[in-house]
Length: 502
Image 1 (tube, one colour):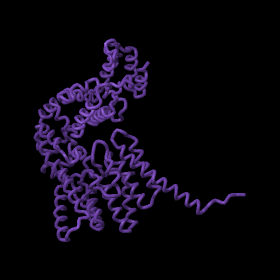
Image 2 (tube, rainbow, N blue to C red; image 1 turned 135 degrees about the vertical axis):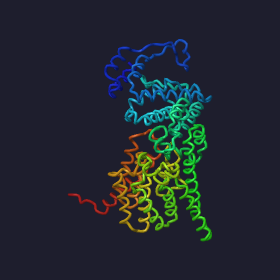
Image 3 (cartoon, rainbow, N blue to C red; image 1 turned 60 degrees about the vertical axis):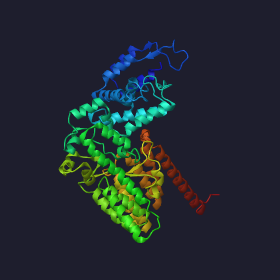
Image 4 (tube, rainbow, N blue to C red; image 1 turned 45 degrees about the vertical axis):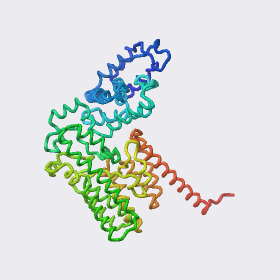
């Protein structure tokens, strides 16, 4: 009877077919002489086994589902089990259970084009299970298969070990020896054409994701070790590009340290000039260096300089040749001449990416948001287009030009509602939050509340992305605004009380 809920879940999901489910039910379960290791009656206990049903589910998997299962087993066998500290903590049955749960709960399609998304969803689910010390049995979810196995020091060791690979992104595949031989054997990474490598190898197609690069928070030693150990020739070229991200952030932090320092005008000018050059030269894309300098201008209240620079940034972002990294087009990159350049030169010339900010480098208006980036990263990533328009709004607001300020808020709102080209999916919640902050600042409280609500709605759709801190900040802003609106209504009521009929 305990497994009836599993049958109902499968029927609701319509996976597998009704005939397979019917056969699973008719097969029933087996009893095997295996007891609970934490029980004093382990020697005489028996356990229910659903191995017959599991075999039917595995046979019903499509090609992508089976590849995902196989890849997770390879990672377990050739990476996790090869490490002395993590050996024996996980097993292939956990991997099978992981894929089963992902199949019936995930909305991501199980087709070849979504293969990496499916793998990464499984990896995130595994991290969540380990963090909660709970692995629900697929047939009887109340049965925690981590009980007595994943807790305390073993939990922390395993979580730290797996997070390192999760943060390494798609380079995780180069750590699996059998996968490395396949990739290198096909010569995918020995070609001179960068775009051709991207086109033919989905394994490295998104290696330059800012979140992958900055997940270690400015300390990329382990990430470089993964790259160096891969022994894939073209991967070596990525090292320079990845170091560019780290260098750019370091230069920006040095620039921020100059804010408020008392020194001679000429000395300050020379220091600023040198740091501006460093920030621009180390920019890993076509916009980030200028945006960092604009942020510095804003924090120094040099609004005219900030506005002038941001208009150049927006012009660059709206150029037809500029590609956002979440919309990378290998054919377009090749036609623009990217194959003739190094990876660093090509990315700096033709691409734009989300801007990483933290508490040390952000502006006061969004400091709470930058202190809540999520449990996987120490940076908050913001769309360069949204951040540029928000800075323009702030500059015009503090200059007293409310008309222009409202224009830039309108640009952000129109982009969120209609043209989504400039905003990546993972920055949507924060983009709505930033729009709400702008509307809140300018006094448009009703629309600000609507923007905060939209941010909360999007965050509520996916609780696995580590946005709980941002959700808390969102709720605080919404609560404060609702209290303000309520007090305004009470004041209006006191000024104009309704006359009561006698």
